[in-house]
Length: 172
Image (cartoon, rainbow, N blue to C red; front, side):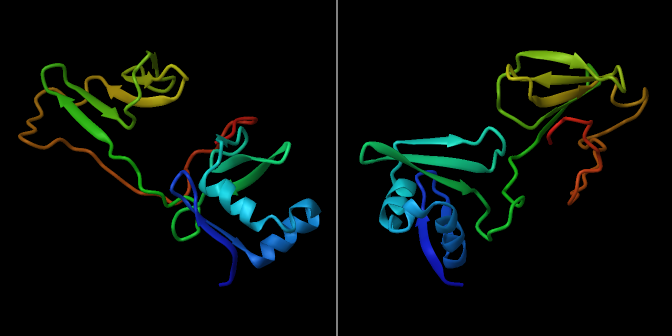
């Protein structure tokens, strides 16, 4: 495939703009037609980079251009050019035998508060200050009298699509 621009951004992401997509951009924004080097420079060494408020995969790269700013908007994809196959951070699973509690953490964010699950009162969600779920605890994890030895029963599965439907008005 032939690219109009190919660069590694300040965030160490490979950004590629095809000639066809360049034509689409220029049709919408005629003033950027001859700014290939400025666009490349903005990606490589921006003054500011911001994440889009609407889409966490979209980033806005800003740099000065004369008396104005040039804003280059990019959707960050993985190295193969497809969304959703980024490497997942490790999940930590800890079993407290004395308290019979299973702890699952999938973020290193600091815990700010906990909430009970609406579905099961023995599931407690750990949340960060921003309200994001960073882990959970399962109280009374094993039935009384179950011997576990060195392993605990945990089932894992990788799914391509979420089995949950978002509530109306909630973005996932």
